[in-house]
Image 1 (cartoon, rainbow, N blue to C red):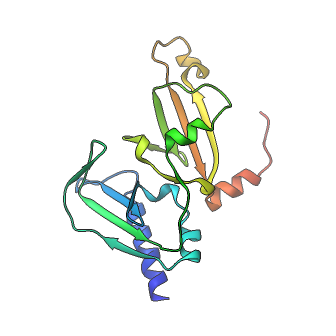
Image 2 (tube, rainbow, N blue to C red):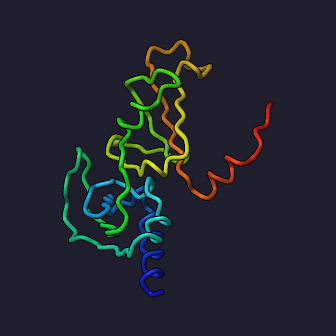
Length: 171
């Protein structure tokens, strides 16, 4: 019980700054010592049910990973949880609904990821849906010379699963 409570508290504290960082610096997340950038793409509930989990706060030191400076590092150790991790490149290789522009913005569960979008790692089984909106589909940007894509990744959070079950309304 103590271990589960500690894990929940650690995840909550880590999540508070996972998308918008405070001035003290950026936090890097690791799963079983593998850099995943953030816990947004990992199913914490599944991780906690299949494995004993503990969180290590690694020694504070500045490090640069893929051009981003981090000064806090959290390693989620769950030896029994070995998900198939995929990054944005791998996700988009499987996306065939429409062409995706080379310039991209990433949203995870409707939260903007402002930098280094290719470092985010996702548990392949935790991805609910991927949507791509190209700039030429947006009325005010149709004639703009800068073409980009907005990539929206929805994970299997409780909220997203409930919304997925709701009947679609036609306007």
